[in-house]
Image 1 (spheres, rainbow, N blue to C red):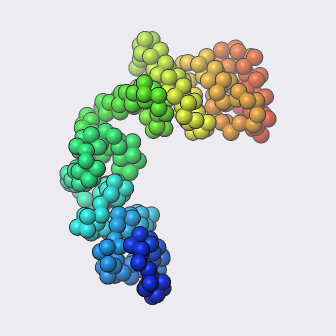
Image 2: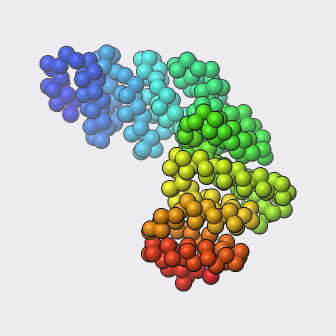
Image 3: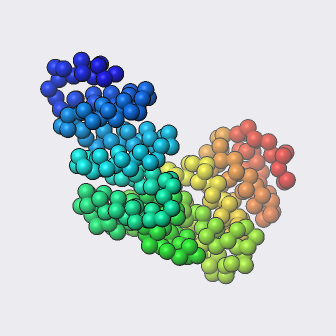
Length: 305
């Protein structure tokens, strides 16, 4: 692979093409021998090293769970002035996956400082702007600590409030809300307790407010297209059922999930709506949902209805 690279780039003058060719060679070498890859990197002309060079290597290490080496890749990128947001996030994941017993949050904040400086933002502003992406890489525990939601007893509610504020700001600005905050909001029932406990955890006013928040999130999800994902509607109906909002559960499924009357892959949403309709003695909706359920290839006879 190294010979092919040298032969193929012998007459190339374009720096961008040279850099892309080098990155492609790195990917090939990663499949063959990681040490060979790093040796090739050491000999690369500094002009052809760019952020993508290090992202390629870090991603492969992450895929293979070789977390300790990602720190070295990050340090090389930093030394070469080739740090990027994506590399920073992968490195943050590596820190969280590492065997480091103490000080992970200190290392994470140092990476945040590097990356936020790179994009011309204050550290806290960058964390707020990138929160949902950070959470995907490092998990809720470290994401909440970066947000300084230090109390584990209230951190979920703080995340929920953060998601609500983001959703409403997007609505005011007329832009689509990202999936993550909407998914956070519709899991609201989990914030207040498990099924069976939630009735005791909330007053009627709080319960009504929680239901309205879920419905508000569904309006935004309808605009963005997220409502079409069966994983989203599953969370919605489970929360509505936990909040004893059977009528809202039925309406959501009838209006947003099975409205076309065609085959539907939102199996759990339809099942929960069928149980809700049975409890509410709404036999018209039960019949309608059951018909689509059967038409979609599912067997309603296995359900307790």
